[in-house]
Length: 217
Ligand code: E4P
Image (cartoon, rainbow, N blue to C red; front, side, top):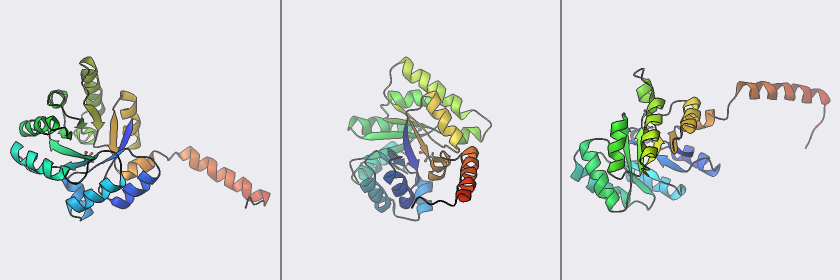
């Protein structure tokens, strides 16, 4: 499973990228707002740092506007993935932009039928939002499983990009169920390294080591 990091915080992206942990980046209007930076400037900086796909989201609500914004965002770098919402206009924009050979991430997906339409429109990525479904007491991971089955049934090439990931368990479950990519905030990727037994074991080793009075360096 590929890892994308879901943030516009360039310092956090740099740390994960230097570690070889990430294969791409996703941003959205809320993350751009949080960064406090100009969308083109911060996206350019991210694209120069990360070799893989960097999703930048359009904000027009009509297909012509999305297409125009998508083409403008695509000028930033070759690894831009244009993010459009899963609306009828978003599907129209997806078809036009993918026909032009651009990468398109169809976002805000909450049903298998929406994912089926995105694949028919040629989406490079479909982003089902796990956490926001869980927030409604629905099962976000079940949606990922349903999309996996449908895409495999018909050999659709659209990649399933598990989004709205809130926990390290979401990452494990997305990998088990066969998501192609998962995008998570930096803190969730870091949390994957944590285990209480690792901390406990390390504490015991350090206590015993102190009793030896030895040094390695
Ligand atoms: C995906 O591309 C979105 O940017 C993101 O995963 C949304 O996550 P949230 O529901 O935690 O805001």
